Image (cartoon, rainbow, N blue to C red; front, side):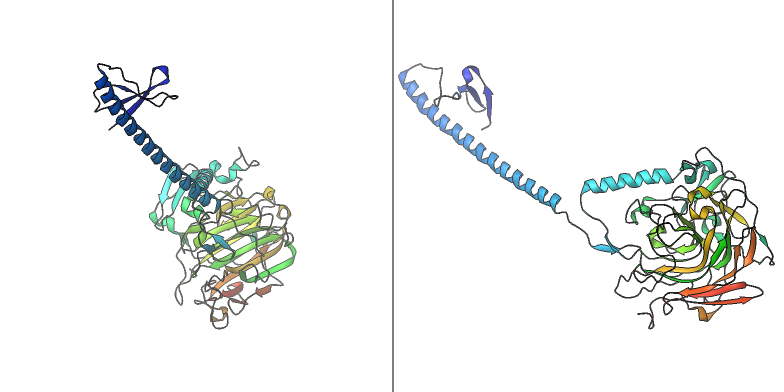
Length: 486
């Protein structure tokens, strides 16, 4: 029977039953008997009292059952609340993974939907900031999307000191006393489509949400973790095979760098070959400008060697970034995409390919310019970004670097260079050739007082040489883990 309770006159409830022939008044809040309006005879009254008692008992049974059902619902709701409270106080955590520095970090800290929503909002806000409106879009064969962005809308011009300004005109190129060496033309995969960016735009590799999610935070995406530049890196996990000069004032550096595809065995490791222009101490005031090629699955999501740049003014703490992932480097070229894959690459005991790179300080305006390949000006780092490098560098460094996370408890098998030791020589080991520096008068000079450093020579080593064709050069690299490098 379906019962409906309506609050009636004199504080009574009227109980309506669909199978009842007439309306019965429920007891008021201060009475325990039922009233009835039909009093035809004493017998009928007795019969009705009997029926009313039965009905009254039935109603009370229904009310008791409802109260019991309500209590059960309340108990279940309370238990559910306790479970949710316990989950919020003790969230489920996932297994840790290894970051680029070798530290253990959680891949997904909790199952809290609010955290995921907040992270997604931060990622979307960052993508809106770094991915500028494109006048043309090019799909690269390797999966990259290249956006052709108007020069004055690129990320550099978000900087307060560049807002409303235009890119600088090209500076005077450093003068060379040596015969100009031949550099094999080398391209980037995105240009294989035959498409190019129009004049007045710059090609920028589009950053995706997947790119950002591979980093341990939005704030750290596109930045190196703090590390030594050329110290024995047992604690930091960074290992080097480099040559360097110091003790003088330097205004630039130049070299041709052999391009390979070294194997990187951990998603949070990398392998790179680059030029460092360095000033300041190796403390918190370290200034660096860096350019070269790197294989970094964490940054790019694949194992292609990619042309990259980097800068910092505080030893990789809060300033600087890779490529165009923050306000800093100003690109002026519409043919080179920083962060895009390089093609072709060298093969063992086969054809060799290298890229020419030069970084130098414009004597007129003080900005640090970058040249790629056969005379292509890529752009510049404005002088105001730096403290010590606003005047000159006090060290120039060339060579390779890898991250050894020891994620399996032993030395990584991530390769440096070609993955072969320096002693194997041309066609097998990776090289830098035609090493030069730039002096105060914008002249290219050969290196003097060159020093070598391989902080883990059983894993990666280095050998220097000089001849009339390659000038100052060196071979470097190695396989990482081997019988002498456990």
